[in-house]
Amino acid sequence: MRKKENTKNINRYLIEWEKELQQLTHQNLNRKWKIPKGLDFSSNDYLSLAHHAGIRKSLIQVLKKNLPLSAGASRLIRGHTPWHEETEYLFKKYVRRESALFFSSGYMANLGLIPTLCKNSVIFSDQMNHASLIDGCRLSRRPCHIYPHKDINKLEHLLKKEKHKNKVIITESLFSMDGDFAPLEELSELALKYQTLLIVDEAHATGVYGPKGMGLCGLLKEKEHIISIHPCGKAISASGAFIAGPAILKKYLINKCRSFIYTTAPSPVLLFHIQCVLNTLKKEYKRRELLKKKVFFFRNKIKNLAHIGDSESMIIPIITGSANSALTMEKALQKKGYDIRAIRYPTVAKGKERLRICIHYDHTYKQLKELSHVLKLLLS
Image 1 (tube, rainbow, N blue to C red):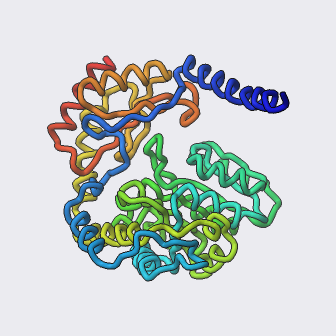
Image 2 (image 1 turned 135 degrees about the vertical axis):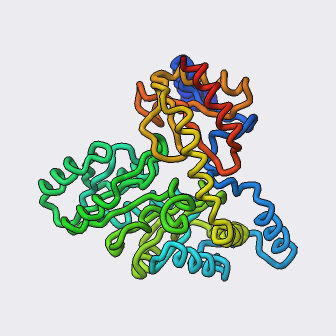
Image 3 (image 1 turned 90 degrees about the horizontal axis):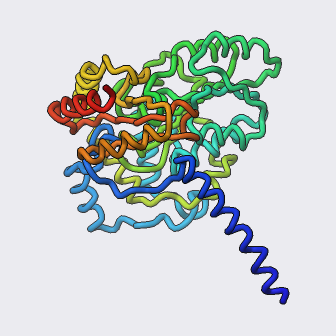
């Protein structure tokens, strides 16, 4: 009898979950994955390296040798390999920092970094920061001021008002949903003025922007007060993430950062893959310039459309204003052979639902022109 009662109690959770899912479906907010189909205008493979023949060939060759398929343990147990060491060395040279430490994902990097470095600080976070940065702030359990998006004056007002001596500013360099750039030079100056750390997530800038694609922090003269995160799942077309900064930062994170210490080390295959990408970026530096030319071309074609957001990059939002209209446009575009996805609440604020278009290196001018015509018809 008790067993039946216990089963009934457990079933109530399943019923609650089902109700919540039905409510999401009713609100057009239910999420489902789809197998990619159609011309890719939705992924973050900005430099079109995911199918790069040279990188694939190098990986096949090394897999025929004695490259371990798994690290088999955390880095501090037995998972530290020459491939981890060499890739971190190559990456710190690439971004011109004193150290780089590799994490299993950008989310895990941010989830570990912020609580580790901000445990005795007050945080100042941009309103439009990524979910991983927001969750890192929450996990730190520290006071957190959310300043209006890119509002330097308001941020300075908050910094001036805050009496706590330890402060940390957190921002993305290129914002993932709006495609606009953070005012990094002004943020850096504020950080120096108020003696704060500046944490910058370079997820969508790494590989594309800054000297040799090292990220937008690479344009700043002074970087001693800056810690940058470089996820590899976007233009690098791999996975994982580097945290780069002063030499002592790496030593500190190895000893203090829980999401690094208690995670099985990423596979040496992944680290070798990233090495191949870094070498490719050195040889094929014109990819970045051609991508930017294509972005400029496409933006000119759609500049008169009323629903375009304030994008300055290869990420171009088409603001529809509701989940229904975003999903309707997504279906219409997919029928015409374009894989462009609707972005809905809570990823973006209510009323800011959108399509998120991503321009890639391998898009042809003809494809970009045709897409601009389709958008004009749909939005007219």
